[in-house]
Amino acid sequence: MRLAPRKRAVPLVDLVGRAAARLPAGALRLDVIGDGPDRARVAARVARLGLDDVVTLRGRLPRAELRAAYAEADVFLAPAELEAFGIAALEARTAGLAVVARRGTGIEEFVADGTDGLLVTDDDAMADAVLRLAEDPALLAAMRTHNATVRPDQGWDRVLRAAQAEYDRAGVLAGA
Image (cartoon, rainbow, N blue to C red):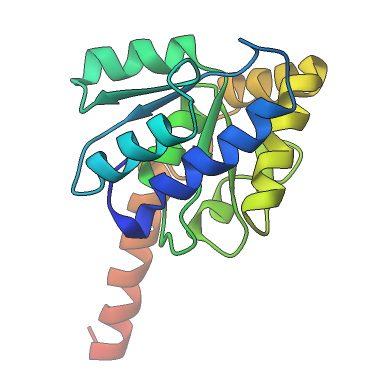
């Protein structure tokens, strides 16, 4: 994620801290992948909350390392309240991770609540969703299996069909 205020990495650390406090030690780990202007604020929040054993700031990763990180992970958290599409969440969903994201964002285009992941209304609900997935391995496994085997509809085939349809529509409007 881009560590910028709009992406809400500091509130992400807060809500993961709340979830971790309700679980046994070592039951939850957050790897924050990415960099940006809020990195120092995120690191300070991790230290202030005593979450050094829970949160790791991994910085920006090359594609191969990102794929490896996804292979080790179970869940992708998308705390942004304003997310037009959510390409990182789509990549994670395609890699087989369950996605937890805010309702009302573009992520709803490819995450069905309870199937591909969980959609939430606020940070407290996101902390509850993290806790729910940590405590319900069957639900988490079902979402991960679904995401690993069912491709989302946002592939190139759909994009090319939509683009062609718009060209066809423009041609009709232009009288071609």
